[in-house]
Image 1 (tube, rainbow, N blue to C red):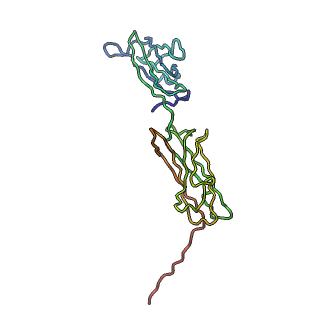
Image 2: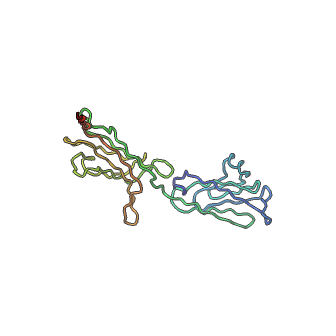
Image 3: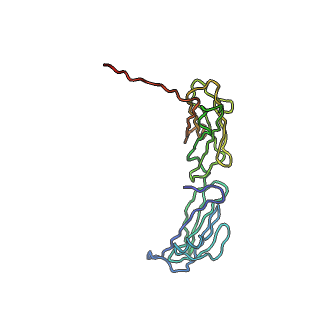
Length: 231
């Protein structure tokens, strides 16, 4: 998975250093770790101990020098605040290896639609608040996502969303979009509301994920059937 360009997400990188016979180099061999975007720093003590790596000698935002233990050094890459590809390099005795860590904006993974209340058949209830929550691949709320909420109402007589048949909005900082469903005076039965995450790419519209909820607009119709008994 890519890191998000939020200045917070991190990736753990382990560098293995071996001699010409294929065995780990002696402890204390110096390794320079650097990156062209983002920052690198030594791994926390627990992670370093698990991998058998010693601490860093000198550190700055883009690079630091560490000493191996059991032939390894563990580094932490922290994502920058812009998208791109971080090229992380490890250099030992003039020999360099690199790896690439992708930094990409988060995309929607799931959308969940809820209605409060979902039952408008009791008393004088005329409105329900619909809330669509969008989460990204990491399970975090996704702000700035385009969400379209509509009604599966071919007749167009069951109700409206903020006064219209369809509502389109952008998720807030908490990954949510809210809209008010208002039941029509003569609405009956049920109506399904559907929320779609709308993605525009190359001039095309895609719906990667969607969810729906059913609103009860009137009391269920009960029918009584009597058995037909013949003698």
